[in-house]
Image 1 (cartoon, rainbow, N blue to C red):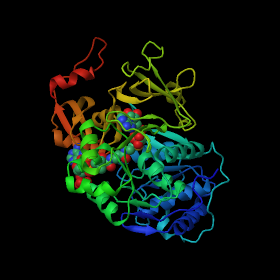
Image 2 (image 1 turned 45 degrees about the vertical axis):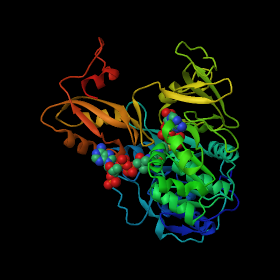
Image 3 (image 1 turned 90 degrees about the vertical axis):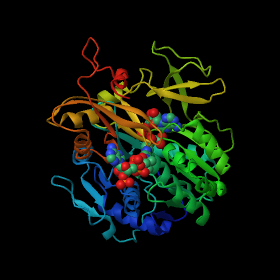
Image 4 (image 1 turned 60 degrees about the vertical axis):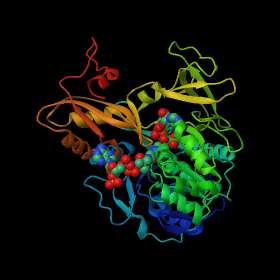
Length: 468
Ligand code: MLC
Ligand code: AMP
């Protein structure tokens, strides 16, 4: 099944631009190098090399494993080992560590390959293995099929009236659903030109609106709150067609300020690595602050109570959001236990998010079932992974990690640690030595003991009593 559209505009990443045909010629040369591999890892910097490598995987029908370029050694070794990637695609300067797969220097490949479609691969073939945090342990590999990506992108194109006439602008990381699947494959499937700003800086978005006719803008709430705090930058987005927010809750005051300054009521949408985007406001419809919209075409949702019974769609009673749709993932790689746990007995996917649904079908996300998944700057971060990283320090006896409110990032990673002879800053640096940058605790509280229940389990809701 083909994932890319038949034609389209150029792709610009951080100031370097390629016409679509050149990009596909380059990706086709990548495809020739990797064909037949079980999976390939891509050192996913914000660069044209990353786009050529990922599209090369799509053309060859080889599953792509994007590696966050700042992932620490432990995280990187886990992703490479667990995914079974047999090749590493990166720019020629990159040096694989001992035991890593052999490097294919993407920038050294010719740009004149002739394959353009990758139509030979089946709809249920894995297109991507995206690593994402669970509540405990190391990140899990989410298997996403070509068919799911095609269904998800087509549903979004319809909801957002996204056409080749748009210029898509964003600066999000190229190793998650938001920046990579929607933000790169979306543009290539719909055919709209893409301008990636390197990082999602509001001033760069504003410049693109003015200089390049940017019309469709993607951002996480942190990007939109930084934009709303900078009136002249925000006003430059008046020429846009649609501002889209997702990956974390958009605060109501940010929605309102953005509407006032840009003249656009932002479109909020809700999704997950495992489900792609399932619920969204529409380009031709209402947009309500605090609400994430209605299910996309082909998506069914329901709310389930803790007692296992459906919750009424009265806009007030919260329940766990379940999803059934053609755009769901295939399972977690090497983790049949975790895959089975994430589906209800009747086959619906359990998102772990708590929501309400109104009689008119509008969804509101009100929280998560577990305190152990943190959303900081739109990144999903598992408390357990950080606790394990802290416990690896010889001075640490106990550690508990939670998300606490943060004006700019929504939540920040906050650690409560019982330790001997080690300071807060040393612990933050210690975590940075094994995990990616955004997983470092922002705040470490050294405490005498952790609150525990009669079973000896840490009561995370009482941690903030120790220190806010
Ligand atoms: C960070 N810094 C720290 C620190 N943590 N310094 C000391 N101690 C710590 N604990 C440093 C950073 O390295 C950086 O330095 C500086 O502080 C500012 O960091 P920041 O506050 O994190 O800001 P910034 O780097 O600008 O990042 C904000 C952001 C980023 C919004 C750009 O969080 C981001 O790209 N988020 C997107 C995540 C995303 O794409 N999620 C989608 C998941 S898919 P320096 O020197 O570098 O400036 C998905 C599906 C869906 O969710 O629904 O979409
Ligand atoms: P990730 O796997 O990184 O995509 O994270 C998915 C999680 O992000 C979801 O389970 C939600 O908790 C959260 N999320 C995504 N979009 C939204 C949104 N618009 N509002 C609230 N939470 C969101």
